[in-house]
Length: 213
Image 1: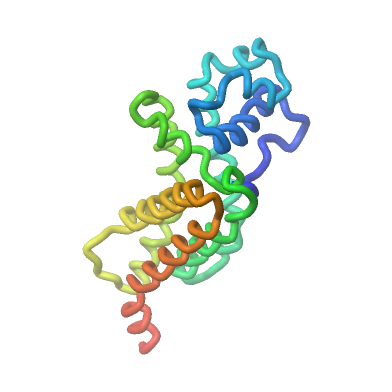
Image 2: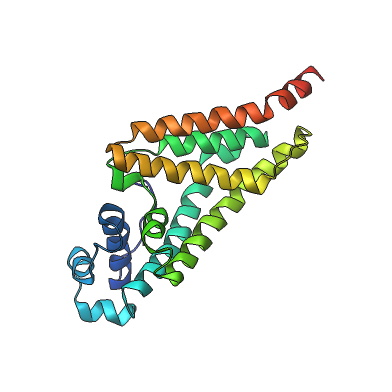
C-alpha cells in the first residue's frame, strides 16, 4: 500500500534499501520478473552488498514478506477505526479504511505478499509459508473484533469469526487482482463496498434486537 511506513526512520542501511526496492519492484513487476540486478539498481547497492545480506532472491522474498508484516502491522495499529467502542463498528471501520487507502497507482496500493504468492505458491514453499505467516497474523487482528462483535450481539451463526476474517482477506486480495486486470482502483473499491454490505447484513437482525432492548 502506498501509505505503508518506510523501512527505517534513520539513514537506511543497504539491507533497508534492498527491502524497500523489493516492496516497490515486486508489486510493480511480480516476483519472477524482478531480478537481483533490478533490485540492486533500484536500491543503489552492489551485488556484493545484496549477497552479504541475502543468500538468494528467495531469501530476500522471505525477508520482504516478514518485513511487510512488521510495517503493515504498525500501519494498521495506528488507524483510527480502533477507537470505536463497538467492535462491529471497528470491523466496518477496518473495511472502510481498506477502501480509503486505495490511493495512487495499482502497484502502490496492492499487496506485496498477495502478489508474490500467486506466482510462487508451489515453486517456492519458503516464500509461500512466509506469505501465510503475514496474512494469518493480520487476519488475527480482524478476527478478534469479529469475535467480540458476535458476543456483543449474541450472534449464533453457522460460521466462525476466523472464517469471516479470512473471507475479508479473500475479498481484498481478489479486489487487487481485479484492479490489476482493469488497471485501476475503481473495481477494487466496488468489491470492498460489497464486502461492507455483506458484513452489515450478517449482523443486521442482531443489531436491531439490541437497539430495541
